[in-house]
Length: 132
Figure 1 (cartoon, rainbow, N blue to C red):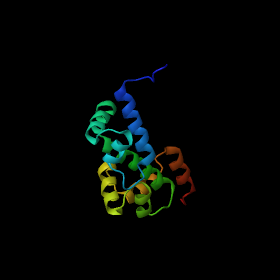
Figure 2 (figure 1 turned 120 degrees about the vertical axis):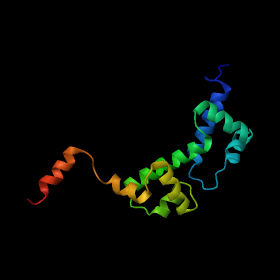
Figure 3 (figure 1 turned 180 degrees about the horizontal axis):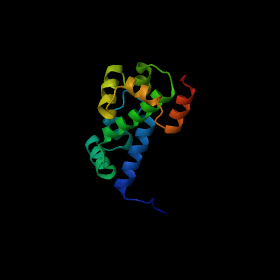
Figure 4 (figure 1 turned 180 degrees about the vertical axis):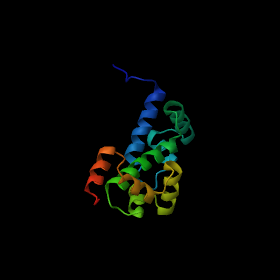
């Protein structure tokens, strides 16, 4: 019988990351839920995840939420509260605080900057259309 590649710790960390990727939008998600899904203690799963992935488990959840929020801010006209709920936050205010902490700008300023092209060719095209 063929054994899956990687150590037991690597497999558990991979299963943890996979579960988080499927559940990060759930506002009720807790480390205990993640650990329970894998049938290990929260402390063990958290320690193993940090050891194998070089980041804290909850930082990974937040990272996924922030990446999805950036995508939604740049590509939709969803309101801040709608994005907060869509990425797993129950409070739009908490979402905004976390977004600013991780990205260095507020969600509204991020959205504004996402629509400002920093490509010289695009800027040149815009400048050509302006009245002289």
